Image 1 (cartoon, rainbow, N blue to C red):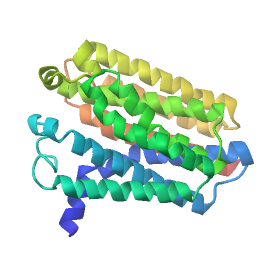
Image 2 (image 1 turned 30 degrees about the vertical axis):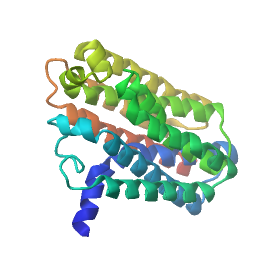
Image 3 (image 1 turned 180 degrees about the vertical axis):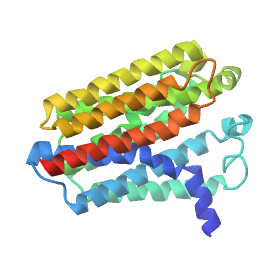
Image 4 (image 1 turned 30 degrees about the horizontal axis):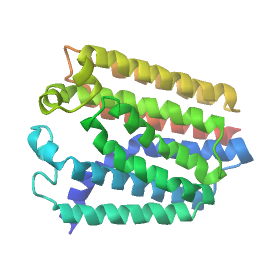
Length: 288
């Protein structure tokens, strides 16, 4: 049983939850302070966590299930749980169903708007896995999907969507899209051979990296805008400057001629960035 649990966690790359969960918490914190001048309750944080874990688990399970044939052909992904025979499709279907139930229960415990928006979230969670079959904008669609986490955190505690929430949403959407473009560079040749769509397979690695930089410039502008349109202080601003340095370093260590540090750019740097921005936001709000 423990081994099976480990396989499921590996399948959904549970550790990658570190990317979006800090921003989901940040959305909840900012929403509560901007709208009410107070911290969200522990109950709200708990249900945001459950919703986030349920949504991401369902999304990754769907992605692995939908892409199982493609993954089996790709040497980089052939060892994943389904193509390697470690999990059956039936087991993954059950896992996805349970994950959606967790998401539904969590949303029902928050507010009416969270429940109304849940079908939209479910649609994107299912839809994005198909997009690389017909459009190179799949990275942007993934970003719009993952960024539902911080937007959901905001909605969970406020029950409404504001321009500040939308700016935060766009910033995280293009952050995700940018690092997904970088990650996709390693599969450029495979995608071209299989007729799959991505920015690297469409434009080549060199142009793809420049597009990723432009996406992260949008992120930098969006996170910077939060400093001016909210009551966040110099503490957040320090965290913002550190996040800019992280983004710069992420792009500096990857080039068209050297993708050897791609995983560092993709996982390590982006995991650090999300935690840094969240922690400095939290400290800022606590001090205030």
